[in-house]
Amino acid sequence: MVRVMKERFVLLTGVVALFTATMRHASSAVKPFVLAVFILQVCTHCHLIVHHDTCNPLSDNQTCNTGALFIGVFYVAVNALAMAQHGLDCCTVPAMILSMYVLASHIVKIEPLQMVFHCAGLRLPFLDVNSYVLVASHTFHEPKTRSVIERILQTRPGALIDAGAYVGDLCMPVANRFKESTVYAIEPSDKCLHYIKKLVKINEMHNVTTLSFVLSDHVGIKYQTMKEDNANSKYHAVATSERPSSDHISHKSSTTLDHLVHTNVIKDAISIIHLDLEGMELKALAGCRTIIEKQRPYFVIETLGQTERRNVIEFFTQFNYHPRSIDETCCLGDFMDLKDCRNYLFVP
Image (cartoon, rainbow, N blue to C red; front, side, top):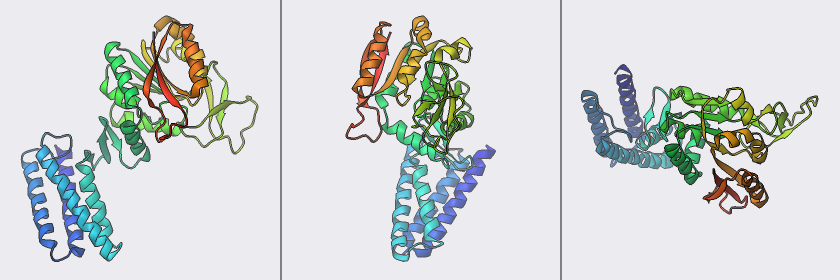
């Protein structure tokens, strides 16, 4: 209750600040409308405080939320006009920022004191650029693949291994929905894994385990990348004695999925394994033969090009798995489908 009251006080302060900044440059014809909207906002906030109600996209009070959305549009339009006429100054800039906040807060739920917003069932820090990467990826990237994984977890409960977890755009919403399933997020990028750990803490999730490894067919191989540490880096093996150059930024030791199970790092029965490893899928598969033979999990695997696709399908043939193509391109932004990227489901 105290936190809610604090948020209401912050929001009311923002309403007053927005009104004051907007009135500074609003034309005389517009000022009566700005005043009317301000009075409506103050009355609404007071009503919400008295009745312990909320007005956001996740609340039951959608009439209020829709009205507030139109108020946000009104403020953005008024202040955009003022900015065009008077340029950027100490009133127009704050007024536009606050206007955008009003608009955004009724598209997604925002908790200003915690500095998070809600999307995909998660609380995301709005000052971290990875939050917007996650939103874009979750909204536009591989929705059919995510749906396939969720259907499998519904029919066959168990652990999900998300290898190449990126910023958690697939595994975190799934972990939030299937709280009884353990999710293992495996990602060699320290930056991406740090963000996933941040989400785990913010959302108080107890079913996500993060692992920083390069998956391969052997344990202990030294890998390094030619790029600065990021999720799309391609890792290559190097001699242990080789000194890193300025071009080789990120260094990781390899492991295998079989080794992670054998050493009880992965303790749960595995339902499905998702591999998105920037070309290292076959090596990772070679390192989980025991899992395939003993547990027979489902696999969802990204394949780039016909050669890799054929090799992956041939690998699973020896274990009597059946391939099924997921009908969507798996490279966000590859509108011309130049990478020929497809996800395949392999059914035991």
